[in-house]
Image (cartoon, rainbow, N blue to C red; front, side, top):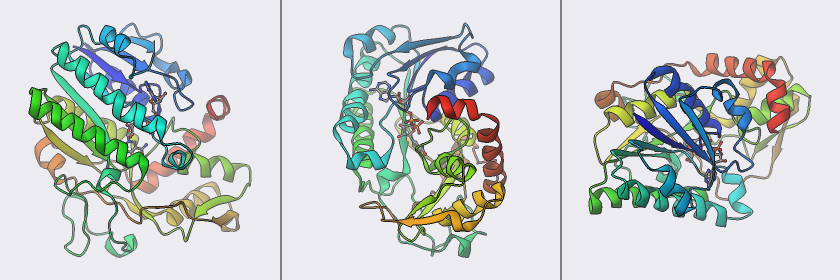
Length: 336
Ligand code: NAD
């Protein structure tokens, strides 16, 4: 089995390649990554010598290169993306280019080379936002059995992206579905909530807050800090993507969530507690324009069809993650 992973030097992509090589001994992985500011060869250090892994530095928008690497590929996992919402307020063009054009180039090559399955890694942000509710009020409700008064995104929720990032991800999802309908390409789309864990770029909320707290710098929290996200450990996301890639139904979308809705403020407070730092480090800053109020995931389809559930308790996963960043300061210094 020969697999093409794009964006495999990024946060989730590198965790996925590590997981795939560990779980599927017979697999051969071609890892295509442009190494933008977000892609780091340091993320591949522990498996860069594995003969089953080949790294190719390149752009998914480069049709000639993509055509070359697609030869002999059985399954594509497309993680490559411009992924940081905050950067879309600076310039949306790279988002359109990589997230939309790049996906179109990959789809065309996958079809041309008779690839067996194309897995598109998408996000819950394509669904837009949900009305706010206090996550502390509904801890007993699980993601697979959402309470009536706590709406969550299902795979049937209409796409209503609100940021340039999520608009490009939604466009890519439409393209993937269109290739399935029009050309019969076997596709699966995965939509996941906010990830945390090892190898995440220091610009993202959790590693940013850890690194600032460790040096006693102020922790910037947007607006009132009450925006709600559903946090999933990257290892749980990776098992979900592999399950969808191997056992998902063609043309299907699968949601993945961590069953851990938390406000940003609650995440930051937990981090401070784990690190033994004072809450006085919290600094409220001007909110991000168009900041979605709440995301929450109903993952019952993944539970029923794939037998998947998140396995990591959020507070334990967060403590492990803090530990990882403290033990890997050299990595943080190299990628930061
Ligand atoms: P990331 O920014 O850490 O990694 C993206 C990778 O893609 C980098 O290695 C980068 O070099 C590479 N890349 C960017 N443009 C490229 C191009 N034109 N050609 C080839 N490679 C290119 O992102 P991430 O957080 O690991 O996210 C991976 C995927 O998962 C994305 O598609 C994202 O939309 C999706 N996702 C992320 C989250 C999250 O919480 N991080 C949640 C849901 C979905």
